[in-house]
Image 1 (cartoon, rainbow, N blue to C red):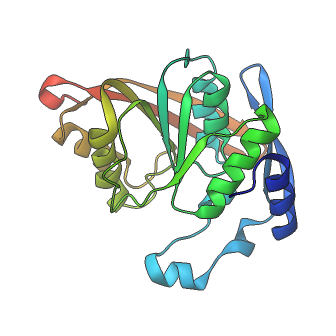
Image 2 (tube, rainbow, N blue to C red):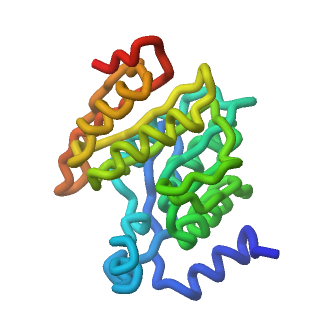
Image 3 (tube, helix red, strand yellow):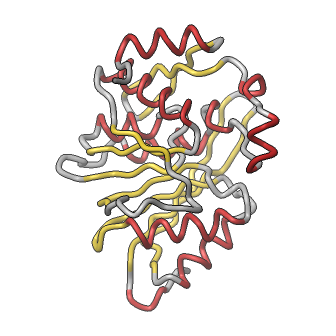
Length: 230
């Protein structure tokens, strides 16, 4: 039986050198537990195997912008899948908004931190699952909403993320992908169009925090006739 709640938090604080950061989301502030330095988590074995790097261990601007977008959604009775949940900023916000959340990542430690951060802020945890985008499980199911923040940083991810949306998005579902202008974003747009997905809207938000200056685009996507994606 896996540990949960405060016991999980203590376990992570023992295994890692941790710190906490405050993340302002709408009218709420999340306290996010994270490794103090993600560079300390780089594993040569992980990189050699499949070029994995511990991007999950930082709070990225795209996740903050996406969480702010999710904060005011009416989630009660709706299911949500997050791709690449990282530290759980978006999944925790979605839970607070009432969604039934499945948080997924390719790092087991990311799932643990997501559970811990949901517990620290809400006193409850999301369902979590390890998902390899290259080999989707047959029982993944379908979701009213699929969300992802800053996941298009490698070219192959354009096709993989578009494929997940086609596979797991409910017929009337909506996907929201937050992106700061990564290398695969235009290929992702094309891959969605080729699969019959239609962009509902495209909104860009400035993000300014200290020396960080980014423009984060939220792509809201659904199924649609003709695959128009402009």
